[in-house]
Image (tube, rainbow, N blue to C red; front, top):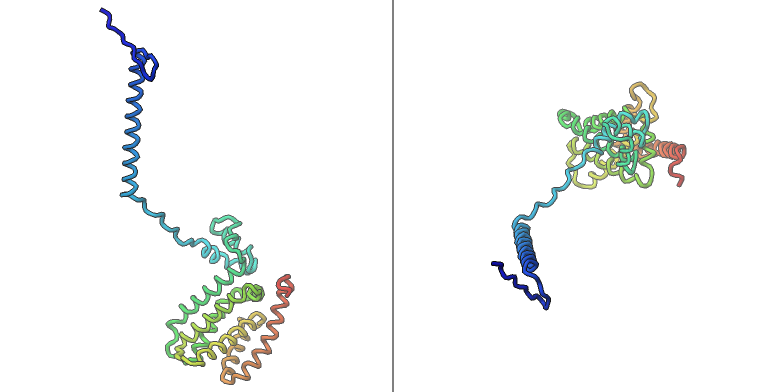
Length: 270
């Protein structure tokens, strides 16, 4: 006996049984897929609420610029306080030559690093060697220690002074000088808390900078003339007027020399 095949009517259309079964199967599969998708979406929503991913940790400090600055100092006497020096320092560490682009202020950033590094080295070197010295001896010891750190680069220090004299860079050496003389007086045991605090630091700043300027012009063996100049300035510091008069005379010469260097390099035609 043949089984009777009954046609079905769906939405006004006659559909043969085999086609109808296919339609039903597709609808059931669609409902299963939709249901599974909704279950997965619901599960992901729960997971997002209960398992929030941790925030991205901040990047650690980048030590590369400091490494390049440190590695650049041995090239100062050859290339000066320039981006070429920075490029050579980067090259020795295996970084590309264009790494000097990390320093938009060029040689000024190398000078900035050098001044801070020297101040820290001076402090560490004299910290435990002050016992038994009088105050003026401590100050002299601090000045000589700091000058000795500049000595290896003294032939190029006039160039550094010219860079620091540019208007955009002036705040940088002033800040370093203030920190330097403050450290010197602190390590010398200064306890003043009145106007003497300011006057002592102002006088010492004048003494140190004038001695450093003298050092750039000194041709005596091992810079003996520089240290003699320093001793005279320290001895004269008791007579404030005389000190300022002599220092201003030399400072005038130093300023003219500095602007001469600036002009020769085409810098700062103000």
